[in-house]
Amino acid sequence: MAGPWGSAADDIDAQGAIYDQRLAGRLLGYLKPYRKQVALSVVLLGAISILEIAVPYLTKVAIDTYVKPASGIGPLPAEAARGLLFLAAAYVGLLIVGFALRYIQTYVMSMVGQRAMQDLRLAIFRHLQTLTPAYYDTRPVGRILTRVTQDVAVLNELFAQGVVAVIGDLFLLFGIVGAMLWLDWRLALVTLTTVPLLVVATAIFRAKVRVSYRRVRTRLARINAFLQEHLQGLDVLKFFNVETKEWRRFDRANRDHYEAHVQNLFYYAVFFPAVEIIGAIAVALILWHGGSGILAGTVTFGVVVAFIQYADRFYQPVRDLSEKYNVFQSAMVASERIFELLDTAPAVPEPATPRAVERLRGEIEFENVSFAYQGEAWVLKDLSFRIAPGEKVAVVGATGAGKTTIANLLTRFYEFQRGSIRVDGVDIREIEGRTLRRQIGLVLQDVFLFSGTVRENIAFGDRTRGGDAVDRALAEVGGARLKARLPRGLDEEVGERGAYFSMGERQILAFARAMHYNPSILILDEATSSVDVETERTIQAALQRLLRDRTSLVIAHRLSTILDADRILVLHKGELREQGTHAELLARDGIYARLYELEFSRQREAAPA
Image 1 (cartoon, helix red, strand yellow):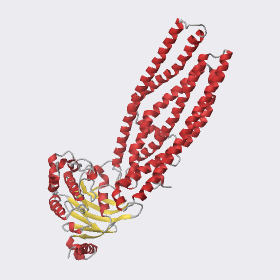
Image 2 (cartoon, one colour; image 1 turned 90 degrees about the vertical axis):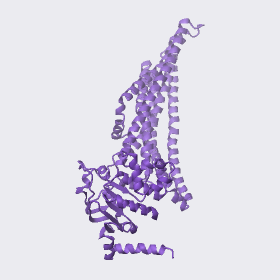
Image 3 (spheres, one colour; image 1 turned 135 degrees about the vertical axis):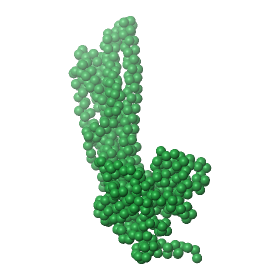
């Protein structure tokens, strides 16, 4: 069942594969550029394992060669003292060398992990930029952020501590087993009788933690989606006084995440003591069978001590492998989500062999275009019209008539299902999206400014042009007053999403950005709806000059802003019902005339007596 902030399809409570060879292969592909560093790390882990195995053997040699023969006969012989001193120095030397090798190996793999994750984040961001708005319409931004941040961080843990570390643990396990069999195969078999218990405990642990960890990740993604949505809408939340209600909703999501974490921790809290108990049983078996062998003269005291140390070392990599299982499991979940994102094809496909286009003249033609956002709920129905180069055409209609949809289709944000759209006689499906949008300027009602300076935001579309072009673009849209009020001029910071500017000022900056972009076609989507009357007059005067050599498509609710349009298209329920100049449409006394009368009757009612 779908959660409050996610779809059922995205709910990770469902069972999935513990190990997916295809996903693992794709993950390892990000290590290929660093295979030399990985190979070095594997060699270092092999050397570290040999040192780990050698340390107990030194203890065995010390006891059986020097301590046991010299016990009970008075002062320690000089030869035994020198031997013990040598072994002690060797013991310390092995520890120092092991520390140095471990440091190098950890540093190398940590660097590899960070670089691989840097590559993966870049790949994700590059892919996110190729996806059309249709993808983001149905997915919470918080969930996407989880993919790029936390899921990628999980994979970093896999690369830095998982893949190669598992190889080191296996080296150590097989080395310890080999050393025990070499020292005394009978005692080794007795010691390894506890392995079936360990296998059963590990299997139960893996089955339980697999589900619980996936549940933790799902709950975390829901929290991120909730936070992102509510932080963006905090002013609305406060205005309607629903802080307590939404706090309770977040409390439920937070509690679900907490309970999933506690369940996950419970399995670890049971498993690790169980491993300790199994290890204690192994030591007890060594003491029992080894002690009997000492009394019978079949096993030396040094061998028994070495076996106790080997048993302790044997269960350490087992505990590590169990931890790594958690890393692998979380990596499979994270990679499943990440590669699902990376495998998402853009809803608007790019042409296999795109047409090369020069500077557009600006001719636009819609021919029998039909479009629906979902299924067959048609927003546009068999729409046809033509805009000549340099013509200023306005699109009006009631809310939901399909005005903004025309702009979305022309800019290739969405793919239309039927008909064709041509620019300068070329079907836009034959032109690469970036190439097409490079020649279209778009100014929306809700202006988005990026963190940075005013100059950087105006030059956002084309930063190759000189700084003087930015000043000219702002001046052309009547931004002299705005520039004059800024203490640092165009180097003033705009704040996050333009927080330091009013809505009208943000729209002026959006006009300047579009003009600096120097497009062939200019689309204004309710672009002056939040501008005061004086600023609107300034912009309208500037637009008379700026639109002279450009095709313009003006989408407007306020009919007063499009009275001078060369032609007005009137949409009703996705269909083109009327078109003509302002005077022609008024004379027709149709839909446009009613819209016009309705707007100006409201203005008359609002005017002071």
